[in-house]
Length: 107
Image 1 (tube, helix red, strand yellow):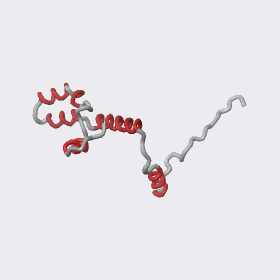
Image 2 (image 1 turned 180 degrees about the horizontal axis):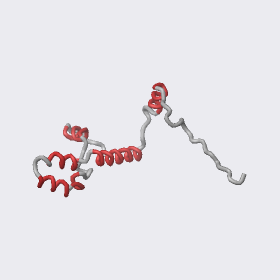
Image 3 (image 1 turned 30 degrees about the vertical axis):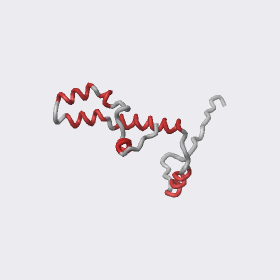
Image 4 (image 1 turned 90 degrees about the vertical axis):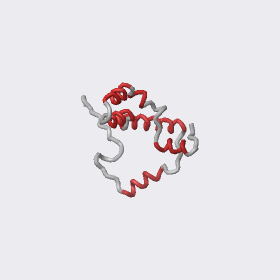
């Protein structure tokens, strides 16, 4: 017993296991109706904002659209990319529609 190796069993289902639709529904419905704390809502909001900025940067989209029109505009967009993508000025379509319909967003 000089060199005992401890093998820990990993928890959960084995690799490659597929869940049945019934099990998926149970998991899906388990937390249905529960509420997140404000801290959790803030974390979710921040991570989604960061994800979509990386995935669909407004500056990248504009740069692509203006690349067919003007080289000067494309260079300006490229040099001001951080300011364009600043989350303070970029809002989602849903937020825009809520603001234009006169509904105030919760801060």
